Amino acid sequence: MKRIDYYNTNDEISWIASKVFTDEHYGRAITREEYQQRLKLEEEYKDEIELAKLMIKNNPQVSELSYKDQINLSANLIMELREKKENNNRKK
Image (tube, rainbow, N blue to C red; front, side, top):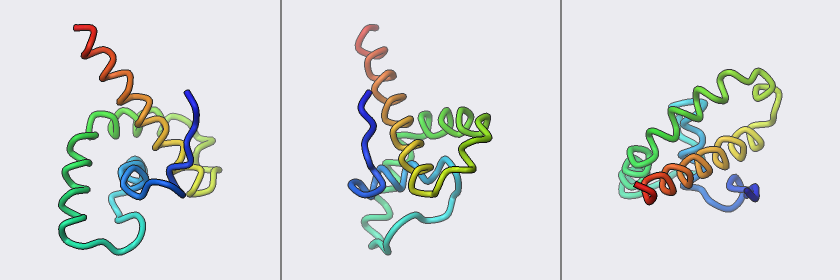
């Protein structure tokens, strides 16, 4: 799977990816409507976020990465997990 630089290209996925490491708000200031939309996205991706947390938590080298690299690692992992989940659901 091709790795994507979500940190520089997609604020919403970067925000979702930041949930792997912290509950603090990631990124620029957003409106109340944008925040509500991101909460919906977080709910939609909750399984992938939790699985990524477990996978990354067990890799001590992740803490040595820059924040940008951590976000990109978790974002790409979340999107890969999402793709696998959708493929499995289609096979059923």
